[in-house]
Image 1 (spheres, rainbow, N blue to C red):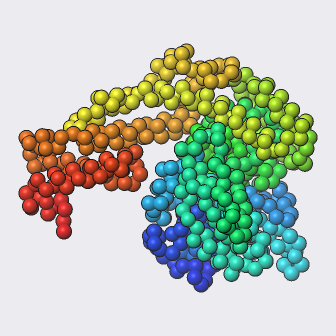
Image 2 (cartoon, one colour):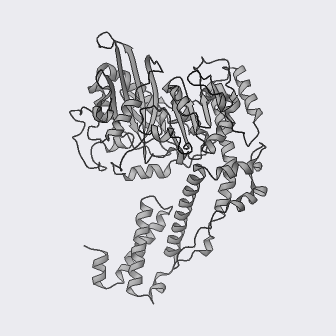
Image 3 (cartoon, helix red, strand yellow):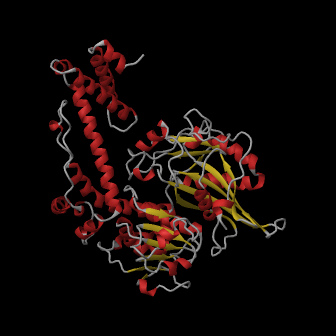
Length: 580
């Protein structure tokens, strides 16, 4: 079917907002809702159209035909999954066209204080799906099939799955009125400001969540939740808005976690073939979270189908496989992507308890079409030696019936320390490229950040390398050389360079504000003075938009400087610079 033309939404009626072409202003309806979600979709199965978009809330949210088609196809498990009952999973799609909603001040404030791995996606949407398929004799096909989908730019998978668990069963029973009430409740939620514990009421339940901040120490975890004494009913406390049960995800492949970490770090293409969208999406999200606190800069699709608009782009053989982690359930992909260097085939999940049969490392040439056995098919040789102590610790935990969340904490701490040991030398070298504060003078252009020279960095590892914080032996130099070619190095370097440039600009603004303005103005022309006013104003705008790390006292001094300078100019120029 052609979803582009056949999957248009039936517009919601009532108080859910009239269609509008403009972006929502901060005080407009749905502004608070938009801080959390872009929209809510209902996808149903139509005998003539197949999957069809039944509703979009709020009704003024604009999706392109390609986005509608992607949401329709990705909101239903494909025929290979055979999912009966209720199932939850998620997908990630590329936004088509330009930005359709203005970013509010709150959005920027939330992003500026969030860890880079938890900031809003500027060019992708997440779809969090609750799918129900049950026998229903009143329906022609004999089955009720419907999905409730939360579309958001936030990677808060745990929060949105908890929200769907509350809302979807009620919605499937009571339909539209229930969904309208939920959307109105979300529109009353406070903004997801990093570092805050929030109480989010929905359907008579209060979800209590902590929004992670870039100021949090990774080792310490989220702070203790607020007191429940004054809250009735007592809140449902979520320990994290985004973290998955890593141990449960990696149980069948504990011996290969470090190899998978290397593949993620180096931005290698990886196909994950799973028995269901739930297992596929959870595994892909677990893999991409292995690098925290480093931002995962490659593309990734927790659940992907042959109907996706990027199918041809990802499966082409005319160029090297793209740096993407692809989660699928259709064995057809084994044949289509035989040229990919790494394939992870996962079997049916086993019941908790004893350690499931561990998947084996296999050569890519062993891949067979359709009946491929579970395994990690790769020719990659790890740069670092395997940490056998970690494996022994996790196996001991299984023998002692240690809870899964404790096992996950052990695994996450290991991956965190491994990533930090790798990144810290890069951070130290990058910091050395920053010009010295004494070289920043008020009336001269700030000095440039020194260039990153890979050979200089590699030479520095002898005295300040990862061996200082990590006991693992191996070819660290080779790992860094491969890392330099990956999208993660490019993303990390761009982010750090941007932060350093902003810091340099902030230090320059402070230097100007601490200088003697009257002495400087004595021999300056009106053109030079006006130029100073315009530059100071530009810096103020950037600083107030949370783009410069500047103290409030400096901002006040800068405003006073502008008033002083403008007051010294002729009246006609004052009118131009400060119109009434």
